[in-house]
Amino acid sequence: MHKKIVSFTVLLALSVSAIAQKSKVNAAWRGLTDYQSTVKEKPDVSYLNKAKEAIDLAAANEETKENPKMHTYRTQIYYEIFKFNLRTEEEKAGATINDKKQKMETAYSNVSTTEFFEAVKSVDFIKKNVKDQTVFQELLPTSLSMIDDLNNLAVGAYKAKKYDEAADFFENSFGLSSMVNQGKKDTVSLFNASLSASKAKNYAKVVKINQRIVDEKMANAGTYQYLYNAKCSILDSAGALSTLKEGRGLYPNDLTLLNLETEYYIKNGKQQESLNNLLLALEKDPNNAVLHLIAANTMDNMANPKVKGPDGKDKDGERPSNFDELFTKAEEHYKKTVELKPSNTEYSFNALYNLGALYYNNGTYIYNKEMNNATIAKLAASQKEIMAKATDNYKKAIPYFEEALIIKADDVSTLQSLRKLYLLIGNEAKAAEITTKLKK
Image (cartoon, rainbow, N blue to C red; front, side):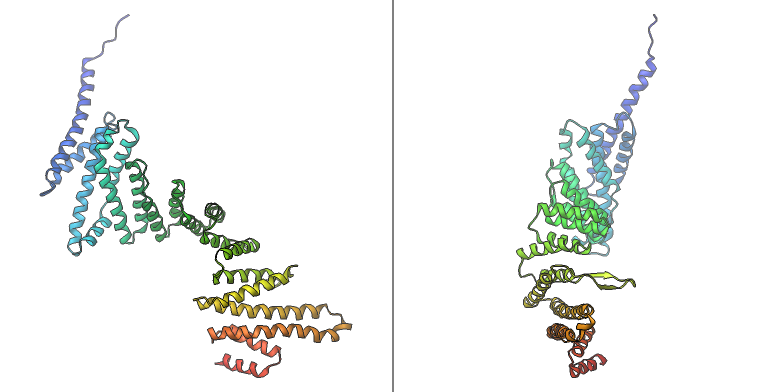
């Protein structure tokens, strides 16, 4: 059998090719060091351009594209290009801005980040693919400097109101910092990323960032609040409720999460669930006027349910079997709201107005219901008694509407309600006074 003869020419070509590619890596290094020697006085960017040209060829070649040294030089070359561009932007900003800090923030908000993130790619490649981590340690000073730049880029974008970009920079800062600092987590960066995304009203990004905070085991009660609100904003109702339940399970004593869950139940018509939460919240914060007002409203609505009539309008529904208990509790919570004198007088006004409405509606219900149920034979005998019950409620309602008017003297709904009540109890003089006020 004849032996295969390997062409010396082919071997020579392969050897020359490998040497040529390694020479590109070396040429890149020479260009980089030559450029760095000029930085302190007057940067000669021609050296940097030569270094970039050589390293791009080496990065595109199969023989050197995964070479650790190539990626080390590539990181430094691309980072130097970014820094050169940053200095250029700083000089431009200096033409109109004297304040050093503001000048730098403007430069960071305007500089191109293309080369910066190419440098980050090479750092990432070395960290993930090179077993000899002494190579990575050589890049440690550069990597730490890049983390600082990412934070400055984020702040610059934020100050320029480029909130979406700021969110990305803060999140990238977290990623690079975690990689460089051996898993130590820069908590502040992710929280800043969440804030920036929220300012940008990019709620899908808010969800993504805060879910990352949860996955990184860095979450607090506020994280779940952000997640819930963001999921509501993107109309993910099921996800919002799931977030609340998870957050409530982890932070059962957090009042904000409890209130958000209560608000969710109220919006979705789950009155008993919302009431259970409100009562639990009031155990933790018994002097919270707002909670008392919401609890009163919830019980009021449960005691006096509304249903849609054939015309599509709301009408009184069937009262529940525990009406008396709900009515009394609603009355107590409305009065407690007023007693606490909340700094926001709107709450006091609403409590007073709703108390008046509670009695007024009860009087009207009693009158209509019992008059309809009375038989013809007993109508005359019952009418006076029924009217007395209704009038008793009307009289209870009047002082609360009058107190409400002290807070809002020109509130038309309150004036109209009072006028009607005075007519119902036969006080035509008072009714005429209200009529005069309404005309004015």
